[in-house]
Amino acid sequence: MSAVTRVPSLLGVGLVWLWRLTVGALFPTTCKYHPSCSEYAVQSLRRHGLVKGSALAGWRLLRCNPWSRGGFDPVR
Amino acid sequence: MIVSTIPIFSQLEDVMKHVLNFFHSNIGLPWAWSIVATTIVVRVILVPLTIRQIHSMQALQKHAPQMKEIQKKYKQDRQKQNEELMKFYRENNINPAASCLPMLLQLPVFIALYYTLKHFQTNFHVGKHTDLSFLHFIPSIQAHTTTHWGGYVLLVVYVASQMASSFFMMTTTDKMQRTLFMVMPLFFVFIIARFPAGLVLYWVTTNLWTVGQGLITRRLVAKTPAPALERRSSRTPPKDDGSSGNGAKSEAPSPKPAPSASQRPRQVRRKKKRTSRR
Image (tube, rainbow over all chains, first blue to last red; front, side):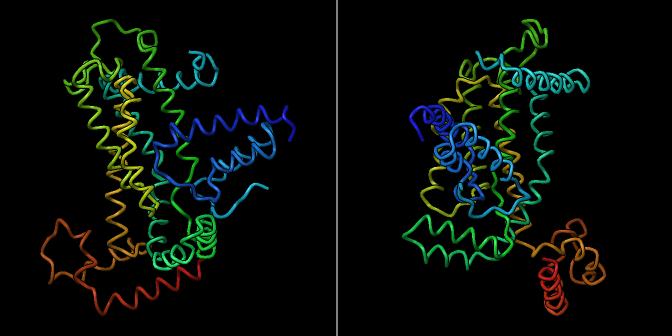
């Protein structure tokens, strides 16, 4: 990824970290997926940039509900 | 703050305003108790998730020895351990209780309450002498928690309830992580002290609900191999008329009086059904 496209995605990564350190830390729930949703978000943002990365992360969050199976689900 | 001007946040605030107003004006609860009632409503809505949680806890308990083996086998490699555990879940149809979406869904409620309390005067057109107190020790749910000694009491209750709820919600067996979650509220108390007391009240209520829920689910999980709970209670009454005299408790201890001959074949049948269903 070029430096120009990397900047906005890093912004997204920063937001994920902000979540992790604040609200995320308050709830002792571990994700049913591996990698966890926030880790998935970081990876997808780094790999696919802000737009596609956050779309993928959002889709993963929707999948991470009590009716889904969970399991090993890496960023493709 | 800029955030409150974003349309979605002001809409959230609007919804919260109506809900609180409903409890206060239509039902007649004081403002502080309206927050408690709202919290309870939110948690009642989440009850279906709780039921899923009970099921998954039972499944996890059933497979605990095998899972421990996997953890032992891949002790060195965390990544591999997680992957193998996930694979094991999938193969055995276990659905881990924890998932991110419900957690994320609670966030909007929290944000909405924050802004509603922040703009309380303009939101509800209340005067200076409106009663915003809670149980005589919090003078105002709108003021910062630390403005009155009662707030400190509330903070202590918060820490205790947060620790207790962490204890019940914990799905990890990792010792480090467990300790971390238990200690976390001690640090968060400094952030939360800056919030309006009403928000802490929300937090305490939701934590206490979690604890109650945890106690009930633990009981259910420990006592029964559950899927046949209702069936058993409907069949047992004729058998235990001689052995148990406690009419009031008849529902809970009913599995105990008839443990041996009658239960074993039933359990086997249940197991078969379960496997064929899945």
